[in-house]
Amino acid sequence: MLTDDEQLSRIFMALSDKTRRDIMSRLLKESLTVKKVAQPLSMSMAAVSKHLNVLRDSGLIEQVRNGKEKLCTLNIDCLFPAIIWMESFGTLNFLDWDSLELLLSDEK
Image (tube, rainbow, N blue to C red; front, side, top):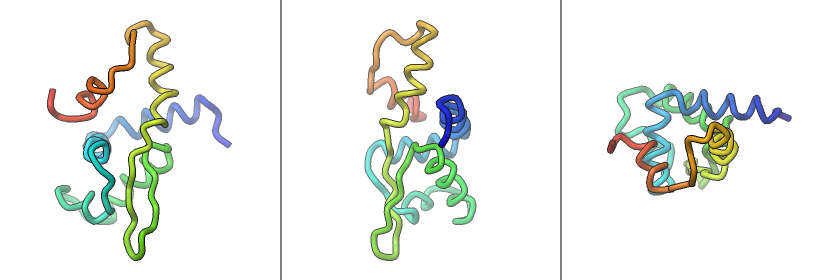
């Protein structure tokens, strides 16, 4: 079992990579198969799988087998410990889902 600090570290490590943030932004809109996650990415399926494993191991996504395919779904609740931790610095006075979506996307 991970400590709270270890879980926070995994979440922030997962979020530190632009490719993983891009994947999360796409999953914010809809659940996708691994194949659909990989389509716009310029990397091998093995590399995509590694990114998805990091996201899954951090709890940020869930993967469910659907026949021969795996369906990836964003687990937004996993972000709450990180949000609470960041709020402890007094910089986030409220939770604004639109701002969170903007933060995770490239539409800045």
